[in-house]
Amino acid sequence: MSYADLTNDVLPRIPAVSALRDEGGPGGLPATQPTRSQAAALLAQVEAEIDGRLRRRQAGITVPVEDPDAIALLLPIAAIGTAAAVLRAAFPQKEGIGGEGGAASELQAQYERMLAAIDEGLLDHLDSGTPNVSHGFKVWRHPLAGAD
Image (cartoon, rainbow, N blue to C red; front, side):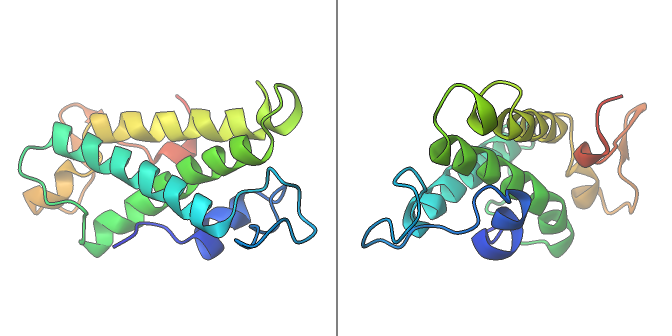
């Protein structure tokens, strides 16, 4: 099971990549534009990293996660992490979209904040049976809300 979908969740976050290349060739798209299978491989890598963080945080958690509430929290993490990787592949130059301060860097920073939220116990509340998302004395904020 995948946490995010390339077409519905990843590509809408990166308008600079309007489409993925077909496997047969550029098809009018830049040669650096990832193919669908390359983007799917990037998504799989991001999801593996998420699963690894979940395993490390919470021993015994079953991954991939199948709980719909947990998937709703993991979907933007997987989508943003994959979007950052796709942008870096499509725009490998050191300036502009793929460079420091560009869209890829901004997405990567969001993704890293979201991974930190997993490390801090993003999904702990789902196993406890309690409906809130607080743990300890720190109240969890969705990573898309931005930094404190």
